Length: 204
Image (cartoon, rainbow, N blue to C red; front, side, top):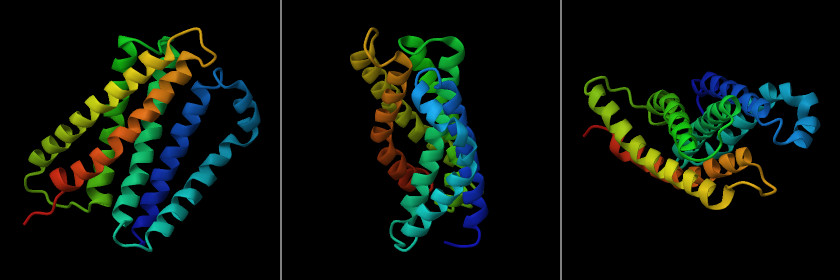
């Protein structure tokens, strides 16, 4: 780790804490027992988040071959909590957690989360400082994210439609989040290698 990593990690971890609290707020009716158990310590996330993030990168920074992937995972987690936070905000205010509108919500939350990830990955994860051809790079970024979006929304919508439904012991809002979590597993490695080799590759 370098000195320049510390302020970046602090900013990212506090953004994560904010969106985790947003998620905590919007899901309190779906998980009342968990909400009651954590209500007294929820603001501690602003302290816990940077500690966990610093320790995570410190551990993986010992292996230079994977430190870049470790940084990408930190940004991906940030994208995840932003994605989930925005998705659940849509669900909370609309009352819709399945069907076509859910797919629209999932697409919107995924895009907004990845816009956040673009700047962090460009300047911090992959250290891409080139200015020339930035528009081409931006187009490549959205091409990679576009494929990831199709994978993400398709998997999330399938999980919700196939296993969610209504009348079960798990609410539709929780199934919406399960679908979003499963879809992340399918897009994590696609996004990393796509950004590394197609978007932020070093010019020869």
